[in-house]
Length: 429
Image (cartoon, rainbow, N blue to C red; front, top):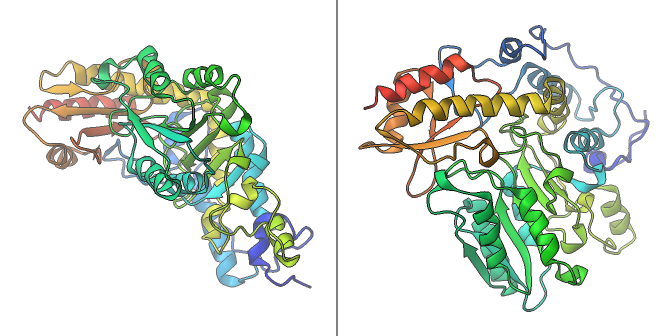
């Protein structure tokens, strides 16, 4: 069998059509029976300790059986043959893109593959082309990856960065005030509006569609190169909410797939519809990169393929992203959102009845997702997490000041675990 040189370098470009793996990997261990309509069957796909209520699964999400099996299959193939490709698939990166695109309702050409949300945001803000006088708008509530990303953008370009406050009490946040605060923060030369879909600090879910509609009005009459671009850290909504890119209306969204999607660790996507606003940050290994390099010239324009960082990856994890998307699709995105929010609503209802608990997350499902954040009177969040663990409840803390106690309801959570968590928090009084 003849193989091209630099075979690994062009894996994602689809340049190896017709090349098959020369080594067959061993058959994976049998997976538990899977009934996508049965939540117990869904939970059975995970190896989580059933003795604990799992309310921090989103931190570094466990993988379900189909994803674990795919990772092991690809790992065994690569260990046996460094020229391994999945059987019958000469372009596994392209398959990942196509599967991801179907999941988010987009064109595969709009998707870059990344290792995490932070990498996606780094590629976005480090690559953003700004003209003299253009500025950046963000909020006080965003995570380090956004705040540092736009700070580095400002250091590189000299652009001014402004922050707006969207709410004082997150539990009382309102769509109207959120949209109005961003609108009031816009300037005539604002090029980047950097926000987060679901705040990891409070659990507030921003009305991205309403923000996008407001920006569409603000952009009327602006030249394309001056249009305010809505850029979203989507990680705590992606996989938990059913919205597709057309529903959200943003210009870019970055997300890891190893959180609420329960995909392989170290994987992510950056979706965009305005790639010409960016310059690639890390050399890509796609077809267009190699063709331009071999001709001694730079690529003509930025594409998602060019923006995807090249280099060797943990391919056994990247290629198993396909199974993660398909697992969620089999369950149903709408069902996952309903389940996530029903459990979150149940948890909020129980916690709000406890006199020593102060909820930070809005009651409204329209302004929240799966995160439920709160404070415990007289106890810091880390102490609460430790004591809850002793009561068989796994929660987390928010990495902000002040830090809050944080729960996440998801497809691995049951109503009984929610009720047990409420009782465990009650015992912290």
